[in-house]
Length: 172
Image 1 (cartoon, rainbow, N blue to C red):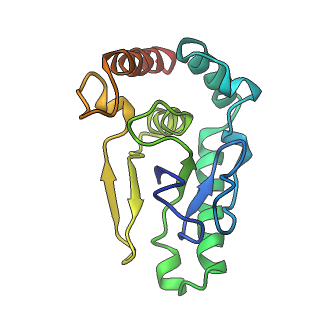
Image 2 (tube, rainbow, N blue to C red):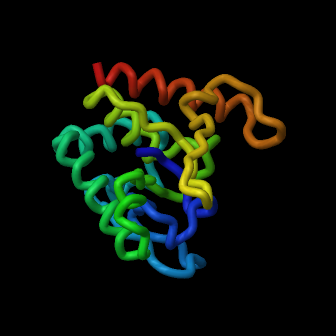
Image 3 (cartoon, helix red, strand yellow):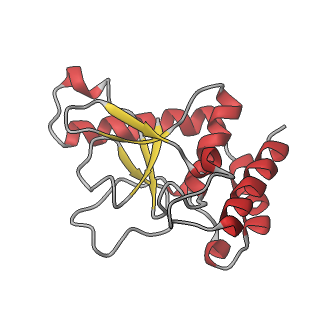
């Protein structure tokens, strides 16, 4: 399992699953969805300090193993529907999608960290390559405190560090 964003992972990518409240208007095609991991109606208005505990309430109401199993089932059904041979279907990993770039705070990384914490697995940020391999990149929680060349300022880096700290405290 890994996380990514719509601009990087197009509809028709094996394993791609939307976990946002909506999908981009510009996408050509549809993504399978898993609404249980979508944020609440507050997602656009909540500040990071409020967003994390609100989203953790959603996650804490779910069974992490069931979510994991559901996501793998959806990813493999998606791969079959795209015509992948059965030998390749088993290799397909769920790719949890929302809108934000890897450097931006987002709920997909909160969901990933929850799965990591609850199931002792790794859920990196990344993408599926055309040859079926996967490439990982740092997510916002790994980028905390680092300088980005023109992408974000110190205020956002501080917010990301704060969010990562809050997340680790909430999952203890």
